[in-house]
Image (cartoon, rainbow, N blue to C red; front, side):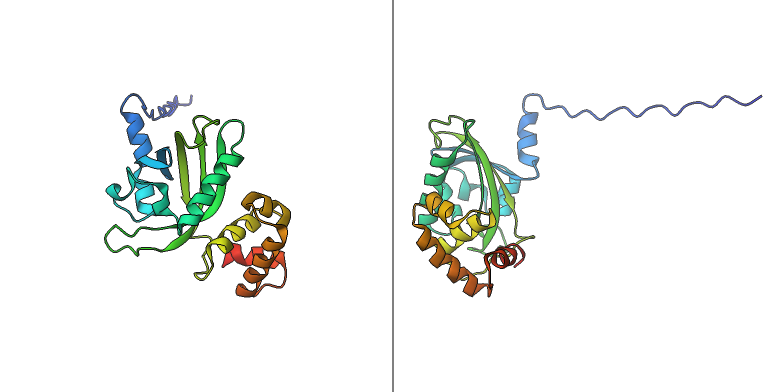
Length: 205
């Protein structure tokens, strides 16, 4: 007669409580950078965003998103694109070049890096009134050639998305011919013979 085998008790699932103030903990410990905004001002952010931009909290909270852009022109043009391209639910996403502040000890101020940004405006009819935005650092996967101009950075980002010259021109409010001029400059800088080769080098530089 075989001895009875006691079954191993099932492991109770670990419950994560997100009641009340625990939502604050979830916000702070999220593995991507998060920002709450109002009229393009940062009214709150989490630890990951501070680490990503090498910033102290007082450098961001209460300040315009402009401090995170390489130039004022890029800040203004991105704001216009967001207003024009929100979907019906107020969502928007793109990849762009952003700037680290270097406020944290030992951090390099002004370093530029590729960043994936996605978010949602709470009122699609008023895109900048209030929203929540997520930032993901792509620098481990994609390095930035330092001598690109602001417009070249914007066009490089849209080429990576697979847009044609016509669509890029429409997105940026410039002519397709102007896009082609900038594309040619990028191809020279990255020593690429074709657009697919340029995109490959932009993704793997």
